[in-house]
Image (cartoon, rainbow, N blue to C red):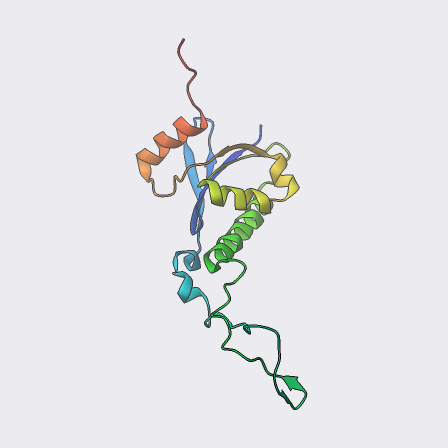
Length: 163
């Protein structure tokens, strides 16, 4: 029988556990991505660029046209810097999982907030996706010790409902 791994993550930190037969969990590795906790303005090197107000009209100086008008304020980037950092971290985690899940019968459980869970699932290789047993769209990263253990058991192995 293969091993079951549980990855609990958010956009800036993750913990990888291995589940034992007694449904206890051993911490295998922790991951940290500090740039995901930084403010957007601290992630960009410079202010956003400016765009001309309209078509280039006016005098032609040395082969280049000059725009009349003041120009529009900064152009927003296509993707927010924090989103870029979250995607980088998702790729890093996906790469680690790809190297870990080698046996054909290994299984994986992912627990992350909904948005980051979507990013992570999008970056997983097909071989890892085949081993994905369960996803939990909740942030469990802030839980520690006994509280984390109880919550993992409750989320991952819910007891049958009484009738």
